[in-house]
Length: 368
Image (cartoon, rainbow, N blue to C red):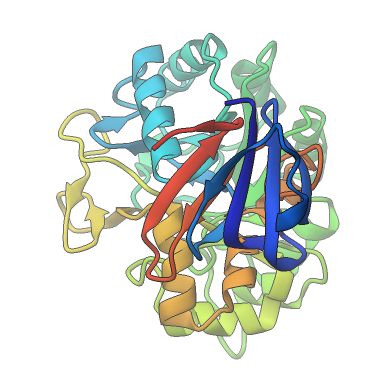
């Protein structure tokens, strides 16, 4: 089905909301948005019966899907299952994340991912090992290491698939940070005990974003506002947030949204059940934890995060969509995903007002 016209829905382009318009898809790309009576005759009409239409969602931090935790199932087959599972849930672009692990595990995971190709796969996000053990969360303290140029090169020399890294800004010297920036990764401040000054300096030196706001970072206190305060007060610092109601209360999401506006975007931090290796995730009532009870990951899809943002936090639907599409795409400097502009990749989701996912279109192909 090369030429498809979605009709009868409300179209959220990322900038504008259209009604009584048709979204035209041709050869895997967004072709145009036209009046419904102007759909060309060579397009197949696909009525969506009043549903909402928006770009496919973009998740910059997740560790697995279904029964596959990538760090424990390092194979192309595992990545393929994860990618297909995510697309079916409306996440059409994702960053496969690895939490702090041994260097051999990191390198093996990188080796496997270098040989994996899927149009939803954006690359690897290394959450560690250059973190602050004081804010390690579920990360093993003995595997967190001090960042040096040599350690960075050991991980990254010759590597193409690593696209993002979480670091603790207070634990990295300016010259080592500059060396790391030479790898052209999307750097994110997280698992950090930074003071306001240390955090602000990291953002001033070019760290663009932050990992799971409020979680595993120095909190906002009225005498030392910590990394949270640095994020709130910095004009360009962005941050991801987990909108599952467990990692962060919905009231805290509302406060953060008021403070940050367009600088706040959504991730899932989703993991999968696992009973081997160092991350043994146990499913609780709506989230995962380690066997000792430490919260270790989410159990939601990004689409469910959008639903929570609207229904539990009170964020308008068009803005909740942008938090899971436009803003992460902008961080990646990708104009061809996360929106429904002419020429963008035709990754599209269709859902009703009760947040039931009705259809996923991936590169112009119907998936459901």
